[in-house]
Structures are given as structure tokens and as C-alpha cells.
Length: 86
Image (cartoon, rainbow, N blue to C red):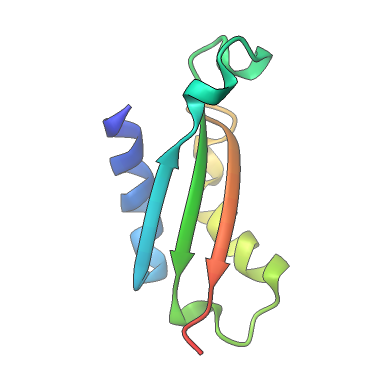
């Protein structure tokens, strides 16, 4: 699982995060249909100056765009908390 977190970190580095926390929540979803194929559930907390002056939806879209090819595998579910620097 740590390889997946490293991969997510690498992809999100393009957003120049000042703060980045990735939490593997997969154990909370054991038995869930999406986790049966080995895909994971993650929470991402990210702060970036690139988010300044963007709506919450636009900030989340940047995160999804960076991780798009990892969904639905190896990422089945993603909770995103974005933060601006201002």
C-alpha cells in the first residue's frame, strides 16, 4: 500500500503542495464491492498556492486531473480536502 501512497504523492507534487497528507482508509471499507479487486480508499489533504482564488470544485478538479488515470484502480474512492494559502 505504501507504493500507492508514494504514487499519489508523486502525481500531486505537480500541484506544488505546501502541505500534503494521504491517508489510506481502505481498512474501513473491507468487503465493499470496490475494494474486492484490490483498489483502495484514500483521503487527501492538500494545501497549495495554486488553489488560491479557485472555487472548491475547481480545486478538487485539479486533484482529480492529477490522479485521473489511477481511478478506478488502484484508487477506488477518494476524499479530498483542499486548502488555499491565503
